[in-house]
Length: 461
Image (cartoon, rainbow, N blue to C red; front, side, top):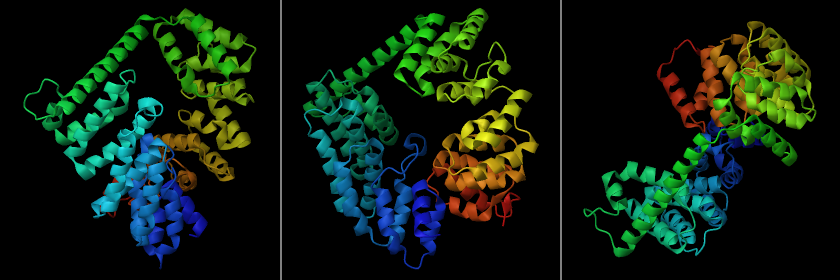
């Protein structure tokens, strides 16, 4: 592994990067690369993967020069305005603090004070408030219950100054974690009517402000759910939403998901048929795509054959909608279209997605060839490979699965690829050893289970 390959593996969170440092004659030669990954977001989706703090901590320790990293990490945290990077940097400082560094503990407290001292949070609780919560969460590991009381008091005081700022959704995870950690002690502190816990008047005022904010947030959620349940979405509403999204040039399927779900919940077969005919009759391809998205993962009333031509469209919205509808359709013509897409347009075409329910053993070579031809491993293609080979086991899939493992960016999907290699009985022992140090927790757990039962038939040299 050369420096470029090491940097790429470290960026993706692969255990091979940690193994490389373990085996290096002088791991400190690579500390500049490690630091660069510490100071920027390297996760594909931190909400599903978690941060890379503990993974990068392995690399920091192997470089045997912690002071080289500590100062820049503190400095970056103090200026950071990205939520998940703030969380990653704060978590790394906790690891320094656990090793006895008062400098890192002080850095965390300074970042906390930066938020607590602001008269107004930038973008309210959805901006600075989220980052404030992330730092406060990590301080629980450093200062314990005292930091919990301080955060509740400071948030409550802020809400008293700015009652118009709704904070509930931004600190609910913190409250859940704190209750799980401190149990009844935290619950009693948060109960305005509790007489079994000692609180200053400032703390009690803050607890009351927090309780009012939580109740206001819960009331808004109840009202929203009630409104959603009462409001029927008509065919005209779906058409209007589709035209609005087309005019705004939006791309993500989620933009129409709520409208689609509400319409399908109350639509009759006649309504669905009318919408299907509207899709076919629409002349604007982008609007047509948004209308078709209403049938994503739903049977199309006019049958799959009417949609096959859209798979060749140059309009991304229409082509994506056709894939979203046809991906649950087990059909010989859909299978043939998937193979054609892989052979002519490669793995970026959505052909793998269509094979998730249409896979045949004879498809392996077509899949492997398409994967080998591709210059990149798109996230959707990795997900589809995982879904295909977790359910359909074939040793011939190994070249495609290895490419997805090494070149995919999403650590969560990499865990699925490793599972697929297990099910296909082709998981190399080299990868099992690497996976002990992977950035994704479930991948590490899987590797440890497999290593604990050496000689299992899934292991190959």
